Amino acid sequence: MLKFAANLSFLFAEHPFLDRFARAAAAGFRGVEYMFPYAHAKEEIAERLRAHGLEQVLFNLPAGDWEAGERGLGCLPGREAEFRQGVELALEYALTLGCRRLNCLAGLAPAGAVEAAEVEAAEVEAELRATFIANLRWAHAKLAPHGIELLAEPINSRVDMPGFWLDRPAKGLEVLAEAGVGRLQYDLYHAQIMEGDLTRFLERHLAAIGHLQIADNPGRHEPGSGEIHYPYLFRRLAELGYDGWIGCEYKPAASTEAGLGWLAAARDI
Image (cartoon, rainbow, N blue to C red; front, top):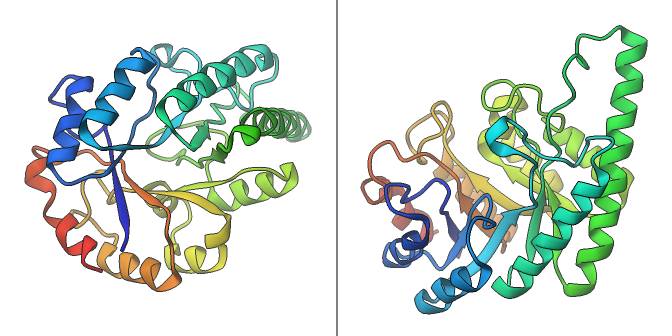
């Protein structure tokens, strides 16, 4: 049976964050994830998890100044000290919340990197790649002794995050293989936009995937609202023996509860 986690940064967003845990449990979810927990005391979140019988599945490492437009620190040269402080903070939260997976956001390529001359652009790309790999290795060394898995997520640079450095799943696999640590957080919505061919990727690389996330495309709404044929993909995942969590990171077209019709059928697969 497939396991679905409510992403509380997206679902039940009409309610205050700490109230969303009760809503997720009432809707039948047994796991939750979200982008960041750091605006709330870790003890307060842990109490919500206990009260509602929920498992904390995943959250992201600190990503810099999100409100100012930053989208991660992993690939940014000169920000290594801040990145490491973020890993330490995330580890504190993960241990309190019983969370066994943390996602590292690579971040946006520095302004002008794409438009630079070919030789200069190649040098910049190599520096960003080397920085990301070094940061992944450092984070893994801090997290692994606690049984916490490090993930890295490719995010589409065409629609949602222009300039995001780690934007293709194939690139994600290459970088993780070079780093020798971590696994992929594979968001089918982002992957559909950048590469498509979702079934073959899952069949070939399932062992390299530590977590899945879903939304339909276009619109990033619930499964069944767009072009991705999720009933088929869910059946194929079950056939492949995927036993990890699937994070529901989509924007409900109306209320969250009104858009959960797909979930009952998916749980029966």
